[in-house]
Image (tube, rainbow, N blue to C red; front, side):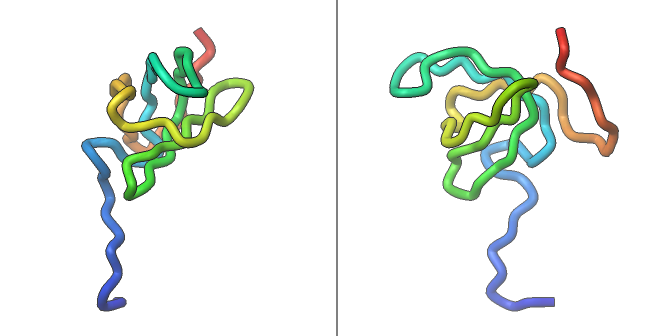
Length: 77
């Protein structure tokens, strides 16, 4: 056990492995992205879609589609 470790399982209601849909309306990364999220404590997430990984998406643009429950799901729809 480490003292001073600031690890938190959830950030802004999201956790790594959740499937999210992000609709980005402004900035460099305008578009809609659906995929698995990797959370960062800062609130800026990475979203891994079917064909690429988009870095630096704010939690404000994300909507939870499926919570991480230990199983693996495909996002090919």
